Structures are given as C-alpha cells and as structure tokens.
Length: 88
Image (cartoon, rainbow, N blue to C red):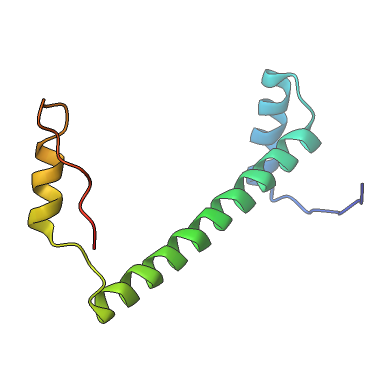
C-alpha cells in the first residue's frame, strides 16, 4: 500500500474527525472509502456517457425501435397475452 499525503481544509477536518469517532473507524478508512466511491461514481458516469454516444449514433443511422412497438410491449406486461420484446 502506498502513502499519499492530503491536506484537509479546516471545514473538512473537524466533521471527518467527528464522523470517524461516531462510526468507530479511522479517518484513513473514511478517506479511502470516499475516494473509492468517487472513483466508482466517475466510472459509472463514463460508462453512461459512452452508452449515450452509442445511442445517439444508433439514432443517426436509423437503428431504432419505434416507440409504439415499445409501448404496446410494455402495456402487455403481466397480461395473459404478453407480447415478446420488439426487435429492430
């Protein structure tokens, strides 16, 4: 494990200390968890952005499913005559 120094602003240090005491965890644990969460959130944002770009490209090329087909399919869910998912 590597060591990285972090300068915490005063407005972060006191609440962090209180939280660490309350949760009976070290400040190091909380900081690592916060960074882990940030990295995961940013990775998800990158993934969503790529999916958005892919979807826009599909629309440009006409590779879509008509909304009426999707609505009919969704409206059939849970009914005896449930429709299969629409295809392109």
